[in-house]
Amino acid sequence: MRVGANSPSFDVSALDTQDFIRGMLEPLESPIVRYYWDRGYPDEMLMMLRLSKEFGFKLAALQHALEAYKIMPEILEAGVGVSLFADLWSYKIEVIDAIPFSPAMCSKFGILTSINTDSFAGVPPLHLDAAKSIRYGGLSEEDALKLVTINPAKQMGVDHRLGTL
Image 1 (cartoon, rainbow, N blue to C red):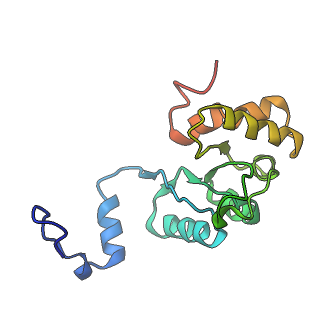
Image 2 (cartoon, rainbow, N blue to C red; image 1 turned 180 degrees about the vertical axis):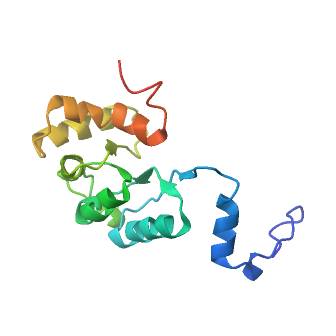
């Protein structure tokens, strides 16, 4: 299929999906896939956990994992982190089950948890969601601070340089 006049012609329909994914991962010694998904539906997160196990790649974190609290045992078993925001459930259907307890629940369960935002407002939404984890989830101030400092640095693999004072 050609998309534009200067696009290379390549037909992926002849490739077996498993062979294609294995081929993409073979050159890497220890593949870590920084998986991003704009919706945190449990079935989609479980699908990615299963794919990573089947094809032998490590997921660093599930992004926008707003419903991770529904599948915490599976996420913990896979050793995958989650990045989410506390709630903001009223602006689109994909976030309807987001709850302010989620970051604290995942963190207390032993999952490496961080807070992210879709906002263009900069850092304040991160601090507000960390504060919600104290208020609604019962996290200590230190553990809430980790949600926006060292934990995301660990998920990105840069904790040896960033995330702590």
